[in-house]
Length: 448
Image (tube, helix red, strand yellow):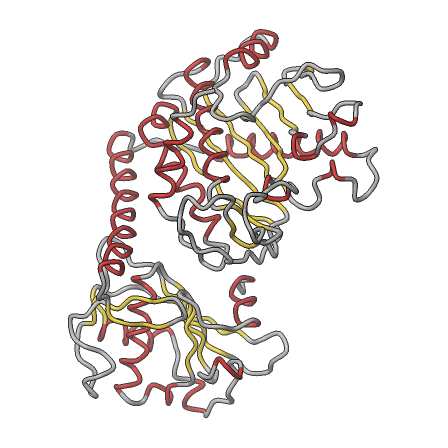
């Protein structure tokens, strides 16, 4: 099936750190052309992966225009041909895929080569190109801003590359340790996954019932954007619902001034029992109690299932008020998702340790709605981060699972694993691991 993200890229074609555009390279008849393609594959893999679009003019100033291929060119970019180039010019070899796409308004079939990220070690050029210029044996190539593939030379080049490779190794090491300790453990069996899906579906329906009386376009509908977090803890001791509600109100962890699962007791806003579920919508009758940015909807069951909907803080008129010029709107902040998902993980940890055990399993899913057209922003200038990457889907979902007892040891790793697939949807943005580590520590060290 065509990938909608790739279709959007080819329709709005421009070279970036993760997108390379090439002409038909003479049908890959000459070895120099094969080496030129291999160089781009190496650079993209070392920079986190990306795509190579074939059959366009190279002049970005005039826009990358499609080129009609000669017969030999149209047939040159087969899966086997690309695999042969990778094995000849790259070490270690990686598995690239080739699919055919057309621009929405075009009539030409274009091969698109999808390059995966390098894994445990960087990719090197394994031989010299015949012209002695295009490709040099033993050189590591990387992508630079603006879409240039060049040798890895500077300290910054090497630090970025090594940081990404270290993280890849950490992921593999954690998974290996987990498999050694629990070779038969399946964190989300099919039956449990179905129960989780049913919980999310029921929670969405419960919220929809509350919104039914609001007119279309009402701010409390959060139609501009919001995020949804759902989790499940197994096995849960299923406490008395009144005791659970009281404990949650008095003892839940607080790592910010507006932590998840807030309990307020003003008219109409207090949590209510609904069979075996505690449910609340932080919307009251007074105008002061109808602020969409503090209108959380949440549910918690005695079976260990949780659900939260919250407005995107980036849409608040006061967001970025300290900056001039103001951040782009609609935006998606670099730090806020890390902070909020860390808070949620610490809540899961507290619930699990209170009503289950360190060996109890959990799964957690986050979905951001209203993301199409949002761009990466930041509300403070604490970090030098690249802003402007845009999302092209209406919603973005990611999920993790693990054991309650692992959260304290691997909070940074879990948050990184959860949010890295989210940020990559913003024009292949790479979530800095150091940023995650720093923000997680902000959460852990918060003092009310």
